[in-house]
Length: 267
Image (tube, rainbow, N blue to C red; front, side, top):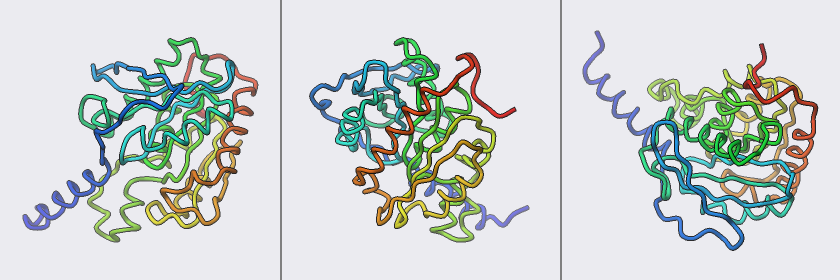
């Protein structure tokens, strides 16, 4: 039986980790000009708020899962820049973020991504034109989405192998209390779709080495783009990163595909 003080300390630290993981902002405002506002219902009855930016008519569609803080409005300029490169982008807010209802949990945000994907399928977008796209925490959500829904590829920016590995970089041995959540490294080993991973080499929140380690565990075809001089929150300032995302999305969505029925997992 564990020492009570140790158990209490562990519970307090685990609660701290959860509060650090989910940092929603309720203030969204109106979408930028030309961006459509959408509402998405999840399988468990939560209503999500989303923005849709139209690129090329038959171009790839990014299902954008954002980071752990803020909401979709925080990357409005990036949303428009991706659309200007011919990409259709559905950026949605997790439950508890922005105008979305509910409260965020790991299982909940996975379900939110699935609902966003399913909404695009109902809009007539075929699976072979959908890219699971995510930043930081959203990278883990996107990898989980590709594990359960068929898509053309996965593009993740500034993401990690697991939440415990991120906690270890900041808290050392106390990371033991961070739990087993967001274990992307296990899922990425099973994916059999093209994957693009980019990471700023000065990232002070998610260490660059975690991005490299995730890439090492991924199956080919795969691409790693180091973003020189970029930190965690300014990585999208690199225009060549946006160009590379667009090239990857177009290339992946025009590859030979074998139907839309099953999630693309390596058997």
